[in-house]
Amino acid sequence: MNTVATQLQSIPPAVRRRVLVTGGAGFLGSHLCEELVRRGHDVLCVDNFYTGAKDNIAGLMCNPYFELMRHDVTFPLYVEADEIYNLACPASPLHYQFDPVQTTKTSVHGAINMLGLAKRLKASILQASTSEVYGDPSVHPQEESYWGNTNPIGLRSCYDEGKRCAETLFFDYHRQHGVRIKVARIFNTYGPRMHPQDGRVVSNFILQALRNEPITIYGDGSQTRSFCYVDDLIQGLIRLMQTPPDVLGPINLGNPNEFTIRQLAEAVIELTGSRSTLVAKPLPSDDPRQRCPDITRARKTLDWQPTIQLRDGLAKTIAYFENLLSRGPWTAIGTGSS
Ligand code: NAD
Ligand code: UDP
Image 1 (tube, rainbow, N blue to C red):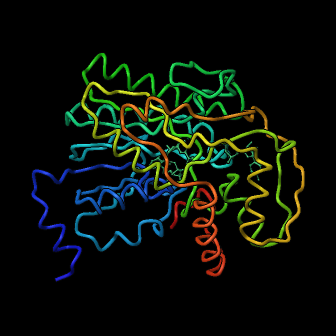
Image 2: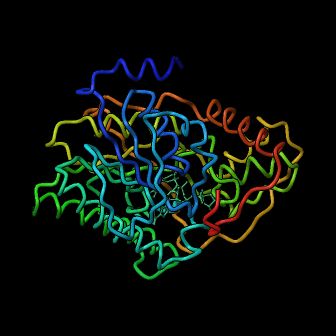
């Protein structure tokens, strides 16, 4: 018998939980599904493949404790689960601005549907919220008590305001219906399985460097971000789900080491040994000037902090994209294909 299956079957059913992961075929979702299966849980991945891909979860498809369901979370879902991680939502500015109405629907209707499901099942539900709820912050670093500085009518608003409304729904379902909620505010996360055409800064810079193409710096490159490697983030999400019912969040999850975008470009050039030069491009509208999490709450409540330094995480991500480049073309957004 296959060794993994033998190990999984030896896990007592009382310990094994049925876990629903929406957006499970995406970048973060696929790593989360993998880690949950590795820990012996019974995972149902729900995804409409808007930005996700079957390739991301191909390694799980033969596992008896992993199931895949094609479904759009803006429609009600009737399944059974003990825990729900709600990750379904395009996350890169390019992808979420492609169909902004659908982005808001996914955040808001998706949250209502998944919270309704959690209410019926008496399940714990974790929301993958975002540092974008802080908008272009006037407080630095950002603590959870900061209410944010968002533009309600800009190009990023479909995502920022959608996620803010989802947080409101989470807290109202908790206050009104006693739903067991957990809200994580995720800061920029990177790693293998980022979509190669999602336009995010880490994937863009690595691909440009590997092809010796100019590296596109938006604005003057002095804006900052704090980059968390995916493995660290997944541990944080699972720890948050495991907290007692009175821990609701929001809790910032991210790496507090802050870099300018120009510093990131220089690190990528050095690590890839690229001949790329830097080229300036216009700064997108409402692009936050600086972003850095205060993770005091995560440290205290979850005993969690990132362990993977930027250069180490970049090296792993570069290796992933090198391999991907050697394999050929990718599918485009909105095809709903794998
Ligand atoms: P991603 O685009 O790779 O994954 C999103 C997944 O959701 C994809 O598989 C996509 O197909 C699926 N999806 C989108 N709309 C859906 C719908 N209506 N119904 C069902 N599935 C749908 O993005 P990601 O980086 O993995 O982000 C996952 C979650 O984490 C998102 O909610 C995002 O807002 C949040 N987040 C991510 C980051 C980050 O840096 N990666 C930062 C903050 C928050
Ligand atoms: N950025 C850049 N060049 C790129 C892609 C992004 O300079 O090719 C900048 C972008 O303007 C932003 C930062 O990198 O200031 C992070 O962008 P990303 O889209 O990854 O995430 P955001 O944090 O803005 O959602």
